[in-house]
Image 1 (cartoon, rainbow, N blue to C red):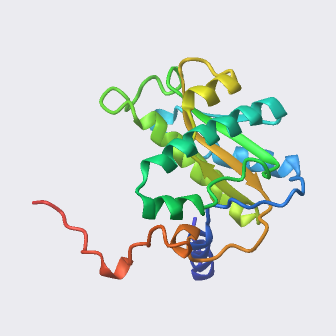
Image 2 (spheres, rainbow, N blue to C red; image 1 turned 90 degrees about the vertical axis):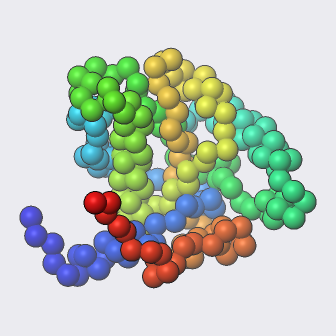
Length: 213
């Protein structure tokens, strides 16, 4: 399969314009679009062709409330851990869209899956979780290409989310995703950079990769 220059340019734009969205409109998302994105994510690379990702939809109000309460506990602890200067900046950051996003998933790695027969996991068992990350990123890029926004929430207690999801003990939480139509067009500059929290590396200033000989 050959891709032309225009496709490569658009793919680069897609990578650069993929943003972590935290502000969503209340408009519903067509379930067929979500189903398409989940099927697209199934084409992500995985160790031993294990496909260990488990997307659990959080639709019920009590499930979502459990996640919100977990976030509030974790966020308060995180705030208290910073010095006064960073505490003030942290408090102004918008870090989640849990109350607005119409579609939400907890994404787990099934550490006990027999699929793949353990290939590539004996020496690096964490490859199962890395495989889940590739599925999330594939879903994310597909969502962005369709105009959807996605936010990855990590300020959470994995155990609390696992209980809310009624996940088996062999499942490990990798991500909690908020999905929906963004309130505004994404900026090429990450929000955390715009808010003064951190700056992105300048690729032109990084040292060239070196191969050890």
